[in-house]
Image (tube, rainbow, N blue to C red; front, side, top):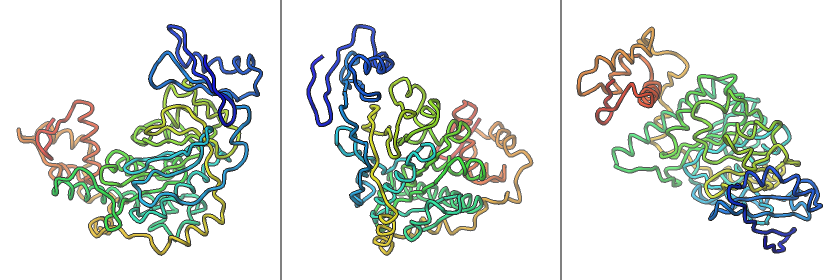
Length: 406
C-alpha cells in the first residue's frame, strides 16, 4: 500500500488479494482501526472505480465535520444547476443534480433532516424556473417559514390529495402537449417552469392520506420527463412507506442521515448498501449524511450546511416577489374541477374486473384509454396505472398508440 498525507490525515491505495472484495475490507474496519491505533470511526474505505481488486483507505486524524458548517447562501440560479448542500470529508463540495429527478431525504429524529431540506429549499426559491408546492401534514410546522415562496401549501390529508391529483393532471396535460409537439422532455424556463412538490414526512402522508399516495406514485413514475418532480423527506422510513410501490424505486437522489437501526439504511438507500459500507447508523452528529445519486456511488460521509432560522427568513423574504407562476397550460389543468375525492357516477361495481373483461373482449385494433375510462368509470390516472401494471404482468399489451388489448 502506498500512502500520501492529505488535509486531515492520510490515504492509501490498497491492492486486494484474489477473491477479496471491498466488502471484506469494510467488515474488518474495526480491526483495522485497532491495529492502526486510531480513534473509532477514523477509517474510510472506498472502492476503486477502475479496478475491482483495489480500494482506497483514508485515515482521518481529526473529524473534519466535528463542527457545524455555515450555509454560504444559494448557489443555484436554475433547476439545471447542481445544488450545493454540504461538504465531503476531503473538503470538496457536495453537489446534487435535481433537474428531472425525484429526491428522498431520510433520517431519524434530530438527524438534521429539516436542515438538509432547508438547504435545498433555500436554493430552489432562488431559481426562477421552478414553482414550489408543499405538503406538511404537521400543521405546516416545517414548511410554513417558506410559505411566501410556495405557490400552494397543503396541511390536511384532503388538501394533500387534491394537490397531488392536480399534479397528475398537470403531468398528463404536459405529456399530451409534448406528444403533439414531438418533444421528449419539458425544458423549464421562467415562462414554463418545472413543478417541484415538497412532501415533509412522507410516512405521515402514507398513514393518513392513502389515496394521495397513489397520486404521488403516479408522479414518481411519470413526472420526470415533464418536469413534475417530488422532493420527499421522512424521519420514519417504515417498510409500509418506503418498501413498496413506486416511490423509493423512482428516487434517483437519496440523502441518508443518521438512522436508528441498521435495517433503515437499506429502507432509505437500497438492499446491500449496509454491507457495502453505507453505515448511516454510525453517524454521530446532526447534518452528517451519505449521498446516493448520479456521480455519487461511493459511501462518502458528508455534512450539510447549517441553515439558521434567520437564513430562512431572509432568503424567503428576498425571493418571495420573484417566484414564477405556472404556465397557462399547466394552470388550466390544475384548475379543472377535481374528482379526486369522490368516485365518478358511472363507476363499475368492480372496476378491476370490468377492465380485464373489456381487454379480453376488445377487437383486434384494441380499445382506447378513453373507452376503458367509460367502461370502468374510473379516472384516467387509475386506468393508465392499471394498464401499466397489467402490461408488466404480461396480461395486457399496447397494440398501437393509446390502444390496448389483452
